[in-house]
Length: 302
Image (cartoon, rainbow, N blue to C red; front, side, top):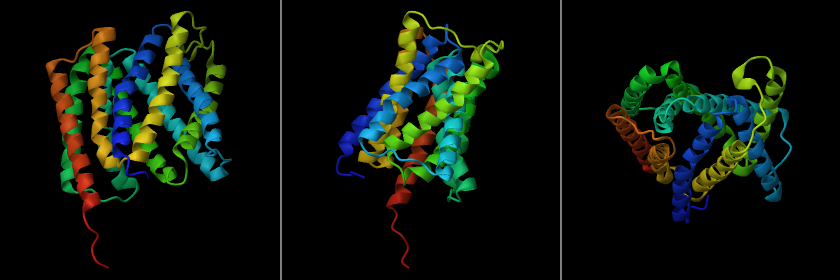
């Protein structure tokens, strides 16, 4: 890792947090006329078209063995489910509310790390996780009243994405980040396209393919391009700066989502939602602070 370039890493993470909600905004705009399954397919097909040549250019793309391909496929299935659930949620509810609920993902990841990876989780982190879930409930409650069960989809997204990150931890040490994202996009496209082909015209609205018209081509292109750019920025941020340095900046995504939601859709969180957001952010920053201190703590003598 190029740890001597932390300012570049910080800048890339700020860029990611500012631009990531733009993908969601494009998806929300596209959902007015395009089925969710088709939006998801465009998102990964465009990402594959952008990142695969880039991975070849940097010399990072290799032919995976069967075990590695199985992991790529599992990651792709998880990120497909997470993306489809989140795009479905934001087609109905405000982007800021959905992202705020999704940000319980670090707490789910902490708990899954303890269960699946045997990582040590102290009582302070467990308390922070409990507070984070309490904050999520504060956001979910008015959203559930207004939009129904769809308000739970960002929570499902958080669970699927946390499992995706568990697999990413296992694979990231051995693969170049661009190659990892390229293979994920290729595997996701290979999974979603046959599903759309089989269910097209079967009466399942989210999987019926339509021909985009006019500005909706731009919305779909925007989904794929912003996904590609932001994932490269995130990978670069983690490459040029320690995770503990850039992780807190990801919460700027909620600020960007709130501003974008207000400008494009006239959505603005109510006071209870703001309280929930504050609890989630506070608990998340505490978990990150504890992680940073744990990394700095000297190892015991042998």
